[in-house]
Amino acid sequence: MKVMMDKIKRILEIFDVRKFLKFSFVGFINTAVFYGIYYLLLQLGFSYVVALSGGTAIGIINSYIWNKLYTFKTKKLSVSETLKFLVVYVVQYLSNLLVIYICIEFIGVSPELAGLPAVGIGVFISYFGHKFWTFH
Image (cartoon, rainbow, N blue to C red):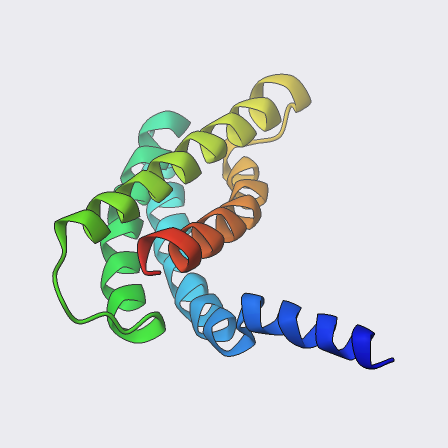
């Protein structure tokens, strides 16, 4: 039983529940910002690629400020940290683009709804990328 409890404790330390909750709060705000821009651009007649790009660009700025100052509390401005942050979001953007493309082109989901599953995947990519690489 002690071995199992030690493993659970180690998993919780790695996962850092408190940081994940903060990250989730910031992510909720960021998702609303991203999806609001994405949806607005679609309604204005832009393609899903342009809408995704616009939402992602605004989301990156929003996320960087909130995660740097609130979630991970790093005060010093670092070129390395900023580049890592952008790399994580490039990976997230490409995975989102792939998910949205598959949903629209192969499954037949509307562009408005195709953005939703991409958001879920993006949360995990960005959390683990930022926790273990960007702000580590």
